[in-house]
Length: 219
Ligand code: BG6
Ligand code: MG
Image 1 (cartoon, protein in one colour):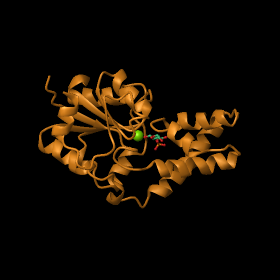
Image 2: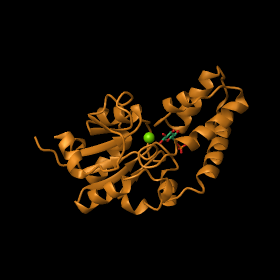
Image 3: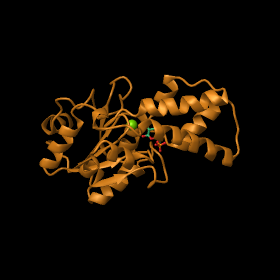
């Protein structure tokens, strides 16, 4: 049956903009200080995972048990470094084609929202000059449960008043695709097929991607 989306909900990091490298640098510096090895594979595992979830992963890897105050301090330190790194970000760091695709959606009357685990999402959208395109931004500040829990996307769909089945989620993280499927959304993976095999369809990026291609893929 032909499918027409009523809304598209985008993850931010790794879908709209490549911030994974800045998260990597921030966590690597912290892990180095703690004497815990931190690799690009670790960073891959942490895509879509909340700040506290990421710290817990690193501490567990190093077999470190810390009290809550220390954990809060470490997260603040990592985030301060991350903020220094993203300070100079601009629209030049947006993935190719993504803004054109979003503008096509908006022009066609499809609602557009953001569903991100990051507490810095609004800042990044501002720095990249695209905040005005998102009618609703649900981010790490507005959720209780992290992906793979569907809360972040359900809040977006609820804002629009649409059923998840009528909304498409774009995600680069395995946890994000699981969140979309757990919430009964249509799920498009952005990245590698072998990593995102649970998604209904996987695209390598947005260059040349159109609303009609999306509808064909999901019909
Ligand atoms: C996700 C990223 O979008 O946000 C994760 O994929 C990151 O790598 C998480 O840890 C939380 O981000 P922040 O900005 O709140 O520390
Ligand atoms: Mg992501």
